Amino acid sequence: MVQVCLNGPRGSADGAMVPLTPEAMAESAARAVAAGATDVHVHPKSPCGDDSLSPKVLAPTLAAIRARVPVPVGVTTGAWAEPDPADRLARIRSWAGLSALPDHASVNWHEPGAEEIAATLLELGIGVEAGIWSGTDGASRFTASPLGPRVLRVLAEVTDTSPDTAEQTARALLTDLGPAHGRPILLHGEDGGAWPVLRLAGRLGLATRIGLEDTLLLPDGQRALSNAQLVAEGLLQYG
Image 1 (tube, helix red, strand yellow):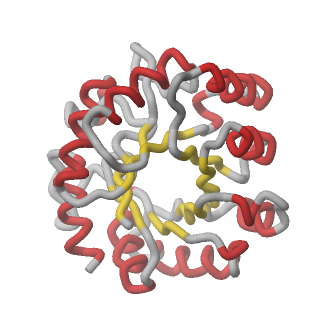
Image 2 (tube, helix red, strand yellow):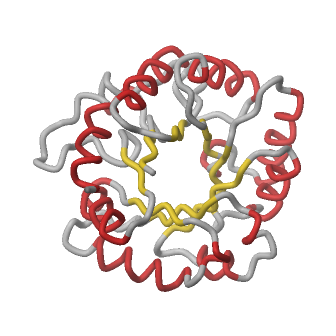
């Protein structure tokens, strides 16, 4: 599986190719799926371009993307979108009033309130992607979590951005995760580590992701023009 990560916390300063409106996200998702992506991860944005967990922002984003693609669509629950854990949990609980919910949502296990957020998502019938970041205690928390066997998949997120050491960091993270409660693992990197980690995922037979959230550059260092271009190149690199 190759997931496309459409935008992440990036904004207009990162370039016009980063989709920030529901319509732009839907168009970018459609082209990425046409290029071979089989899953979508998106950060819904407020009108001023900030990541948002508000149902008023989430609903039109999901509707626009789902009108264009037939694959699962997931969102973030990152703490930067709502720093206070109680407020973040309340926002996610308010999704219960929506007519359509995300297929899955990522939960960064090292963040305060992660277990409560994951439990709430599961109660809502939303799949949980357990985000386990290198350089944090996320792996140890997850391996001890009673919710571990219930998550949809594990996002093994390599935060080492050096192309020289990211693969080594990725292997260490996978070791820390161990059997990962038997759940599928999606391995990915970011910035300078994105392409080395993607190639490692291919060699190990693990799912991966690529998109403008993780890197703005192609393997040769040229600026990527779109998520679709990154997905097409990612599939070649993934093998």
